[in-house]
Amino acid sequence: MDKISLKILIFPIGSYEYHGEKLPPDTDSLIANHITNDIFKLLKQKYHNNIIILPSLNFSLSIEHSNLPNTAHISHKTFYDFIFELFNSLVKNNTIIIIINAHGGNIHTLASIEADFNYTHKNCKIIAPNIYSSKIKELCVKFFWEFDTHSGSVESSLIAFYQNKQVKKEYKIIPSKKFSGSLRFFKTEELYPQGIIKELPIVIADPKKGKILHNEIINYLYSHIIDLIIKINSSNVEK
Image (tube, rainbow, N blue to C red):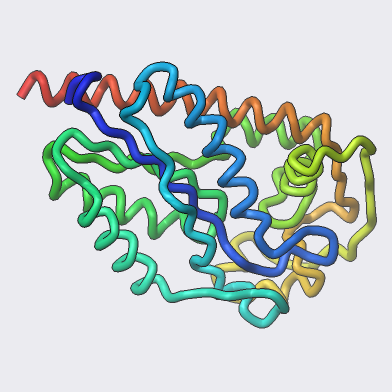
């Protein structure tokens, strides 16, 4: 792949699921789309007209929230087959598809898609990074004393930033009694009836911290994606 002929497609993936009373059901999609738009702007400076944004996928693997309101979900098999067939229809030689996924429930299936696709396509590759790198998680712990994965302070602060909120807000929730890894065995409703997956009893929606988190996510993803594209190109040249 070379810089001139390389084509880059960015595919945002979210979900439609209950995010408590304070956040909209398309929270993950909103996060994915905002991140995608800023990544697109940066990559466009380098790859110009060879990069496009695909329409976002707003329904995905949310079965863990299926007993809660405002939730739609599909099966792992359906999700896997749909994504794999979609990408097969889109790619030509020298194509890279970047997945911007903001729903944690998709991560393992997307990792399988990434591996299976890349093993069977020589000149077309998928990059499916985790938007919450270890550094981002450490920053979340610094800001909120934990990395709360669903409807907590992290997502609340990002959404507050995206919605141009000016005031920091806090509200109390009822923490759940659970054991480590309990979501592997029980649905969200059984562990977190309020639909908020976190351990501490306060949710913080701070737009200023949301802005910092968003910018850190963009900086990490951009450098990570560029590094991988360079390595992929170098490996193809060596062959």
